[in-house]
Image 1 (tube, rainbow, N blue to C red):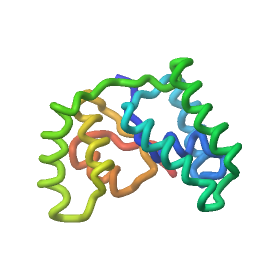
Image 2: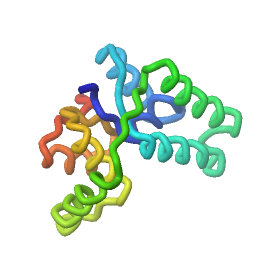
Image 3: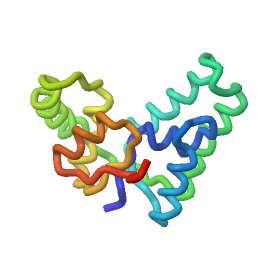
Image 4: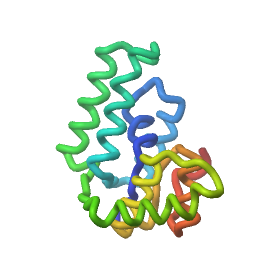
Length: 148
């Protein structure tokens, strides 16, 4: 299966103001293929970028351009959207929460993304979120990109 990406990677790849933008593209070019993710990840990435103008991270025109880039990547097959049904993901997310959130606080979206990757039988989890990567690694996923 293609590597599963979370919102932090997609935001980094498509928003040129993100500190990880060059690393994201360097990894993606080296990987040399499509990545996969879910509609929920894409929603979170687009929503994050939509908020950038409010925080003076970019202009509204830049935000729209970056979101259009994500949508184009989906249409062109660079980002493959997979379906991870909530009736399977939510019980897994609850298990992850029960196991991991007692040791450290994790956001619900981070837990849902790791649960979706597990449901889709991903082997690799691509994220710039270190804590989310820790959870993914503890669940047996290889976390990337390396050498951040």
